[in-house]
Length: 412
Ligand code: PLP
Image (spheres, protein in one colour):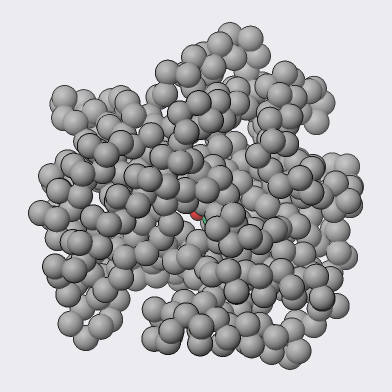
């Protein structure tokens, strides 16, 4: 029998047979509390009946109608509905299948729209694993090592990571903005810079929210310098943080916004939204792909939006997120091993440090495995794998949060 390649080796002990809500059931009848949600994808829970029904219905009608040649009903409807949840000025859309492709599309569009080459990315950012997206990514060397030469023209600026620098947030933010100004003055002048790209909350880089002053500072510099601001909302969008978009916590607006993950409850679908003025600069044929805006994925996205609205999932993410956060902080207060609990809504991370104060990926992995042994599936993140993250489906209720916290306390 063939084996899986190393990167496909499962991190958790589950051979999933079926999923329902926040639970997975394995082929031996075991029940698992899934606080990974397919890495923040199954926003409405596993196999939400409305999403299943919409996808099944669409499969019988039209599976694929390549959208640069044929418009189909689910895409037409999704485009209309997205207009209701997107910022008004981002009135033009392009669809693909994954977050990485959205990053590629955003960068290609920024270069097309401005005619300028360079992109500023921020330290700890994760934008995907394709060559362009990996070039923007500094959440860990495993994404980059061995793949050089990566895409040129990427300049990395500091993220206001107070935990890393050991300063307070104000000092760290001052430093990060000053360094950005220095990069504009010494490395990549505004005349050479197409865009800045940032996640409102660092995801793979360690579940670290940015802050309002920093993001507003980026917006102000983008306007002053004629540089576009790309917000990567792949992980933070669709209610994950307790607001519909991560950016809503900070009152900042993008020129180009990326989305994927929770968008279609598990069907591959991603997209970028931009002003029509910017999108018009993408010449025909330059952006595209065979599978983007697949009809079944679009039908699932429409059902996902219905469920989010009908079941109040954005508010649920805020409410259950607060309960989760409180419980995680209580556990952290009982141990010196967890130095920080951070995140927004249902995107919460626990950072592990050793006795010398160094990031402790080994303990984080051990606790993750111990939680799995007790039936709770979790993921790690951060450059050293030192953060254990909780990212359940947005349908999670108080009982599931409390059950997860009970297991977490025992595992820690
Ligand atoms: N951007 C962010 C913020 C992400 O979290 C991810 C994936 O985790 C990506 C981009 C890449 O998405 P994908 O794995 O779908 O290519």
